[in-house]
Length: 102
Image 1: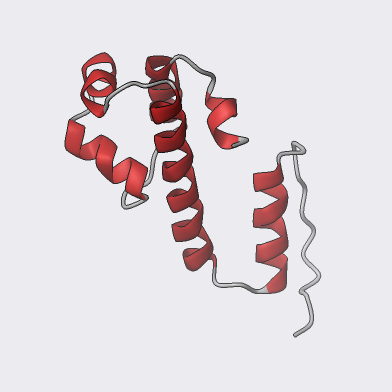
Image 2: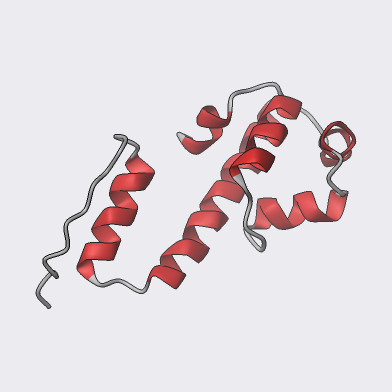
């Protein structure tokens, strides 16, 4: 399959952005890529939280997000906004970029 001639601008050198750009240009089903991305992001959140030895209940109390919603984020069942990711990272005691780069 030929790659379409679509101009693509990447504003940052993030590995995630390069990954998305590559998948987009190669014609991969983006919905599947998105599902996998949120699963990996959720797993990175869980890993960071456990590394810091913080419970879901503690993160929920600090962010105002329910325990159940946090579980869905960690399992990749629900999308997470940048704002929420930053909130969760602060509650864990790390930077959001540490989670993304995990």
